[in-house]
Amino acid sequence: MAGPSPTGPLRRSDGSIARYALGVAVVVLAISSQYFVPQAWPASRLVYRSLAGDVAVVYGLPIVAFTLLVGTGPLRGWRANPRKATVEGLGWYGAMAALAFVVTVALAVVYLAVDPGALKLLERPNPALQAAAGNPWFFVGFSFVVGAFEETIFRGWIFGFWMARTRAWLTPAILSSALFAAVHIYYGTTYGIAAPLIFPTLFLLGFAFAATYRSNGGNLFVPAALHGANDAAAYLTLISLAAGTDLHWLLVAVGLIIVLVYLLRFLSTNRDPDAPPSVP
Image (cartoon, rainbow, N blue to C red; front, side, top):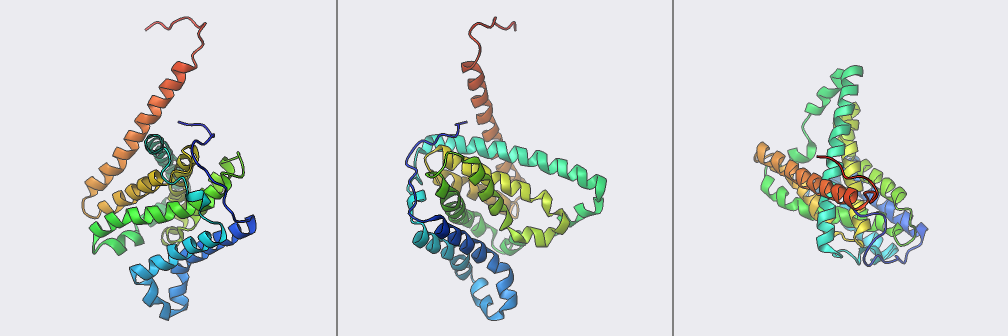
């Protein structure tokens, strides 16, 4: 897949680093507020138990904050290089999802050796899926709305802020992906000491979306669509376990095929011309 040099209109944002940091703080507080504010202030449950109210707080406040503090510069390439971004986005998604699977299996082996009983915590119901059980088709569709919001915030602003400021993209990609994983607090509170089996997947998917944004001039449409499809596959399991699982692994398989094609092209174009031909 593409190297670190971006193609397309990555624009420098107008905000200072201090204003950017304030925007990040608003994101963390707004998203985490849904986990503690309703408990500490019961009257606020009227807002958080309403889908519109919850979305306004969790995503609306960060979007308003970053728009005012940083500007929309990092978002201006949201539809840049659509074909290239689609191919590379699928490749990054497939590669990172496969890596996440390997990491999860390796961690599970460690858990089996150290504390097998901890794995039973993963049998606890997923709170997000529980909340969607009454109307799963709605949440399958709504996944793409959430994907658009979260990619705009995390890849567009939190990661994209740095793209016109530094060539060292890996550090911002790692830090923004770690933050993306960390704000999913409910995994930690639900699964306890077994939560480390889940967070690597969140981190690696965040990294895949950041890499897609970086190498395609700030394209956000493709990461948002992949993010939405990833979440939609999880909600689809409420309707049909086989359909949801198949959708997820179909995306991964397509991505891995793309990675394989890139790898074969790379090897063919970088072969030593003086090397003797291989014997079949």
